[in-house]
Amino acid sequence: MTEAPDIAAQFEKHLNSPKQTWLLGAGVSFGANIPLMTPLTTRVLDSTESQLYPNDAIALSALDFLKTDVSDEANIEDILTHLGDCISIAERSRNDSIKIGEYVFDRSKLVEIHLALLDKIAETVRWGYKPPVLDEAGEIVHPESIGIRGDPIVDIKGHADFIAAVFGSNRAGVEYLRTPVEFFTTNYDTLLEDALALNQITYRDGFIGGGVGFWRIENYREGERTRAIVTKLHGSIDWYRPGIYPSPLLRIRDDNLYPKREGGAVMIYPQATKYLNTQRDPFAELFQRFRHRLAVGTDHVLLICGYSFGDEHINAEIEQAMASSKSQLTILAFSDEPANKLPKTLSEWRRNRSWRKRVFVASPKGLYQGDEGPHFGIENQPRDWWTFTGATRLFSSGLPADVQEAIQ
Image (cartoon, rainbow, N blue to C red):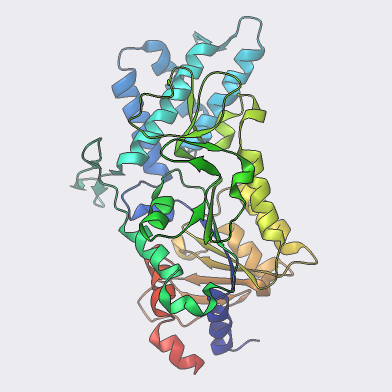
């Protein structure tokens, strides 16, 4: 059994690894007033029905079907996937339609609804949304807060502090020895890229150009001064595919009148666009980048924050990389323990895999290495180092004083 101070020392060493890859999920943007998946789903569906289709019986029927035909735990990504399946079925039918209940839906109508949902997701993420806070009796304690054009509520401070900490001067001893830090994210927002720019960190994100840019997979290739690379596995609110074919994937400004928006689509969430010609979509190449990145290099650390381990595709890529006989990858996961349990996938990795000793978890209960721990818990008080703010503090200020004292 490894002693707790040794586990903490190893954890600290990996925090300062010269080769870092980050996987960031929705939790890192929660403090920026961008909703998590459940409130995002509710907001998008409600606003689509009330604002876009209040008197459209066919559209409302389609949305009602989508909500009731998926599982109770389904989120907006699941609903988009289900809708994409319906579009594919309609496309294959001889009438270019599909019958659902008493309604026959033309494929064009389903595509219209699909694009409307994507636009509502982009609108909600772009300007921000805080759901109402309820007490135990279900009464509203704090009303919802809705960001709008001209009055957004999105706050970049947390991301700006995070980037400043990761690339901070107190880490200058390893700065010029390591390859660029790679960030993979499932988030649609642009806070990570904006924070890098605000901190004057040179980065690549697959696009070439200014306010309007075009995407090519080779555009991720690092240059001499590249310090960060950003890969958005589920797309972005500022990615747009024009409706004409062939057409490039573009990064665009929200207020531009060009390119023309008729027939095009905001490019977010890969499974939701599978009814399109998949050769036009970048997502397969993005996941290939993720797979390749996890498989190369020594002293390589994958840091995971704000991610709930709910994407089986991503989980499978990580597990495959860790299980390789040549792998030297180490996982540092910053994770909550809702209902006093780590996420199921993470629990499996740290308990039942041959490579479990290369899995570290910082949670409210303390620090784990593989099936050992938690260590350094605080009685009747959760640690906050698993949060985005807490992880940022680890990079800016180091381990908590009591853990540092134990190491020394």
